[in-house]
Length: 195
Image (cartoon, rainbow, N blue to C red; front, top):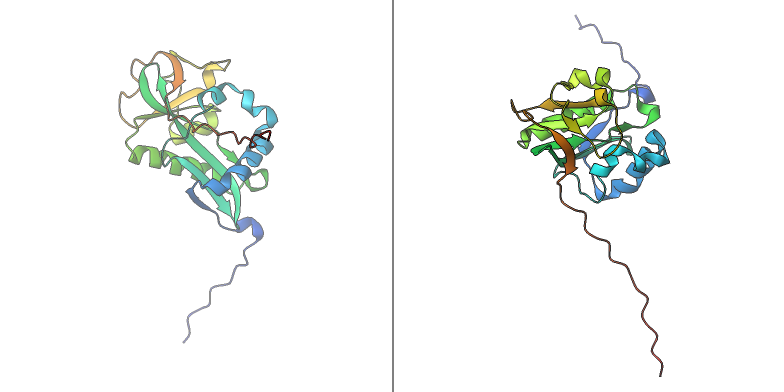
């Protein structure tokens, strides 16, 4: 007697798997285009961008989601001081609009938070929608006395602690503390010398 055969299920292109890996230098141009598509070209003027300008993301905490060889999602975490307490700021989290129903955003969040915890970070802060980020453990419980370098909605400033008390007593401005990006060298044309 033969075992009953399992029906074969044809995978549609929507079911194509994705992988999350460390961001690579070759991802940068595509990442910037994805961020423009998700947040608009005025994204550089947003309040949380002040925490990222001129800074490198935290080591090992810049991730890319790839699907069929294409970058379809991104997330980065950045070192900050949250009113004198060391923390990370998460953002931006972006997923290609054509891939939003595949769980890529949630997978990026879970992997980013697991990597931050594994690297010994005590807390992560973000500015986002409380109903979405609550499922990952983010609340406004420890952010009431913190502020950002620009306008923001208080109820959107959220945090998660990996170490109990990591944000206890945190009050004041959230400021960047991460490594500065290397300055780009300008290339000069050789000077012409008169003979």
